[in-house]
Image (cartoon, rainbow, N blue to C red; front, side):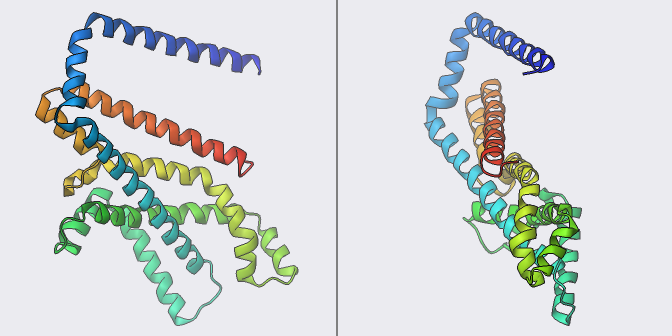
Amino acid sequence: MSKTDRKTRIVQISMLCVIFVGLLIYVLLDYQTIVDSFNKVFLEKNGTTRILRGLLNTFIISVGGLILGLIIGTIINIINFSKSNNIIMIILRTFCSYYLSIFRGTPLMVQLLIIYFIIFAFVRGQEVTIATLAFGLNSGAYVSEILRGGINSVPKGQLEAGLSLGFSYNQTMRKIIIPQAVRNAFPSIGNEFISLIKETSIVGFIGATELTKVFKEIATASFQYTMAYLTMGILYFLIVLIISYLFKLFERKVLKV
């Protein structure tokens, strides 16, 4: 560890100690009030059960949205990087261009409301499923650009080498280019997943029960706004912190980046 790294580590540990001591003093000074607020938020009216259900729905929407986004993004890149120029591929490329322009050019909130209240106006009781679909369609537009950047980052000599070995263009893309592109794009895919988790806070507008909606309902019912919203913020922060660590660990141990 270099001298600069040691200094940075000391500063980080010192700041964490100051924060911990400050929180400890606050708890000791107002212990009974904090305990009462905690009980009202987590123990009364099945607060913990509702929070866990909201947390589960948050992960369902974000994970489902990312998986759908990866599928859509991969299909778009297969179409756009195809060498075929028949009329069907031209139509598909034009459709993909419109799709990217629409979903990257409008807010996710607007897309969610249109999909729920207009496209699926006849469907009710499937808010989580519809939210997952909306998030997946939105994510697909961004993932396609992430993967495109990953493909473009692979040296062109790799493609030429694959073709010179007798592989077809599609085989070269599938066996040589795409694996390297995914590895290059992996950090950005992790950032996209984190963004989806944070953006799930808007799905309460269509009635889906996720983390933000649950804490808002608990705060309104118990009048413990400080405890509820601080807990919500800390929970989101811890989720993002853990997921960031897991992505970096996977990147370092499995992808060897």
